[in-house]
Image (cartoon, rainbow, N blue to C red; front, side):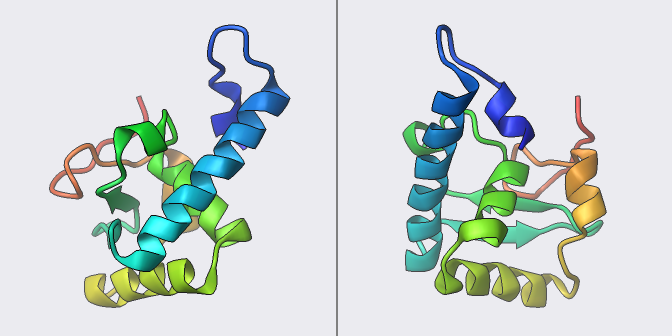
Length: 113
């Protein structure tokens, strides 16, 4: 996953991958508990609102989404499905892969850059 290439000083790819798995599990629990919410944008992008910075730790919304869809709990996946229903559209994996993201909880969306 591209997120594991954003290394901290002195960190190996394997260490970053393990760290991201741990962070993904933390976000999963917060999402399942309703302490973090998902929002799907008009073009099919996704953002996660309420992730504490110490948990996010450089993890993008795209990486959070990929982690949850790959290894997440049923409850976290249901929270994403609920966000899709509220938006009236599904998450578009091509849009997520393109890097479309939000810095303001989905009020505006920006291309990768």
